[in-house]
Amino acid sequence: MTELFRDHINPGQLHFMKLLGFNRVKVERAEGMYYIDQNGRKILDFFGGFGSLALGHNHPRILAARQKFQDEQRHEIAIAFLSQYASALAYNLAQISPGDLDMVFLGSTGSEAMEAAVKVAERAAGPKRPKIVYAENSFHGKTKGVLSLTDSPLYRGEFRLVGDTVKVPFGDIEAIRRAFESDPTIGVIVLETIQGGGGIIQAPEGFWKQLRALCDKHGVLWVADEVQCGVGRSGKFYAFEYENVVPDVTALAKSLGGGKTAMAAMIARREVYMKAYGSPKTAMIHAQATFGGIGEACVTAIETLNVLYDENLIENSAKQGAYLLQRLEAIRQKHPKLVKEVRGRGLFVGLEFQDFSQTLPMVLKPMVAMLDDKLKGSLSGFIGALLLRDYGVLVAFTEYNRNVIRLEPPLICEAEHVDAFCDALDDLLSRGIT
Ligand code: PMP
Image 1 (tube, protein in one colour):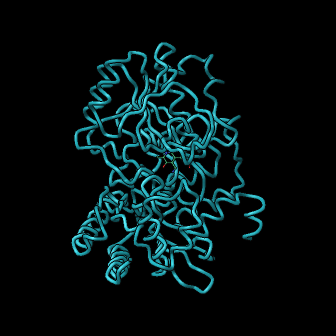
Image 2 (cartoon, protein in one colour; image 1 turned 90 degrees about the vertical axis):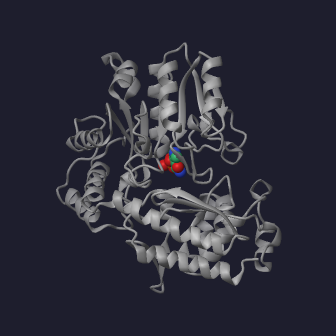
Image 3 (cartoon, helix red, strand yellow; image 1 turned 135 degrees about the vertical axis):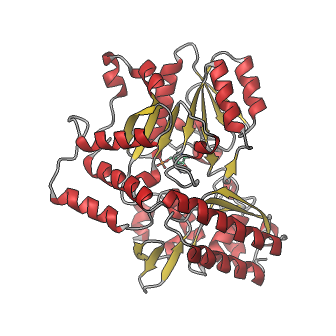
């Protein structure tokens, strides 16, 4: 398998997976909070597929809904038919979404939903306001359009960027104010509500209220990327709900597929949508992709939302997230030379280590020496993730700040799982990482 991956998929990524040791985790199956390897050993999943497993692995209700759909031998393709499944999912999303976030576009990936989000905003802003503001350390996807809003040399490579963009520091309302005031051709601002790849970063309190007011004042459309922090991960369905504000456009993906399928949605305010695509002539401009809104994915997403509410998983995310932060803060105070900061909201949590890359454990030196130059630098999160694996715990680090491990367990997480993770971390740090 390793050779096939290397020869036909991505030799570079294999190298990276080897460094992380993920290739040595031979997963046979997965259930709830755990991966299970070929020896029946359970591996606690605090990685959570980069936030795509709100319901955990193989939730029985998701399996049942998908099985029922298959047994009924329904048709799949929504692009050429009126689909009851796509319509029902869009209705549910409109009900859940605050304000007049009513119009839904269905796709398969976060990148696709973000492309759709930027497109609807760009058209609604009009041709005289083509500029798009985005944030430092942002991640919005790797497809060609949104790559230009993804602030990473790692992902951008030497690809040519597209569109007219203006970059501001994340969460800096004054920088945004200056940009809006000095440039009337700015029409759109695109921000993750909580930055994921950037290191699990939140904007200062009150930022979103101020942003909403600034956007209203200057007629700029706000696109909120909730691909990772949405679907309850932050402890609210959307993280922007913490400030009782409504963006003009938002995007969901990842967990919307119930951990079983690719499903994504762009949701726009009715008024904004109508400005962009209100005329029948725009039908083809806005048409979905071949697999947008396919039956099985919609059925899965509908059941995902049902489970999320029936099992009170959004409240659980807030509750267990608070407990996790409390335990991590105690660990930070116990090991201040190793842990710099813990932060997050709900079960979207980052733990930033001090930079101990300079005093690497001997065993890791040869591995780190193999890293591409672009990946060198601060690596404490990378090292921490690697060492935690030996405790039967899976976590990942954040792409841009590699001193940070990201903790995104399924929202079905209970106190015993938080304890198991924190006990492992505490033991690792007590033994001394360096
Ligand atoms: N936006 C954000 C905030 C993300 O975290 C991601 C994925 N990590 C994306 C967009 C892109 O999603 P996908 O990988 O499904 O294309």
